[in-house]
Image 1 (cartoon, rainbow, N blue to C red):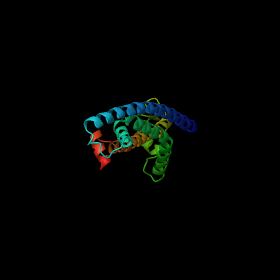
Image 2: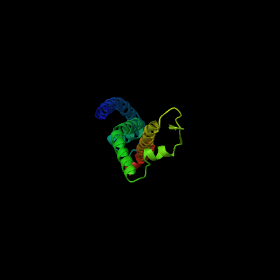
Image 3: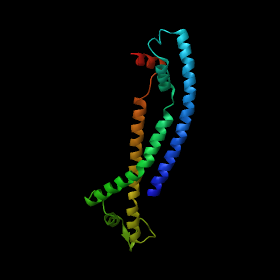
Length: 180
């Protein structure tokens, strides 16, 4: 698990480096677009920009036009990968506690409920009864699958809630908000 965690950290760091490189290239284009838009608004609607400096306008323009999804997707992906060791630890603890307080049936109890005829489990036809115990013990993987799926859905929901809550409006709306 330590190697997985270290590999994950390295992968997320590499993707983060690519993201920051891409973002710096996009910022260059946004600065050019802001200068063009500033000149256009100064020429055609100077009263609309009254009381706003070019630096303030550039900050508003960048907030409106900077693509936000790649950053949120990278953060959600990194959070998911880095939360897996913790998630598996929590799920193991929950399954252990549930087994100790009797919320989960013991494999022997489940195996006893399967029909056994002539020393063979009817469910497995060609397997000895011990195979049923191994099979039933392996069903805990089912809980891990859905546990990790639920953790992933919670992470995605939290990031999407933040993504939409911090969404900027149109440029004109943000200029009015920044001036007021």
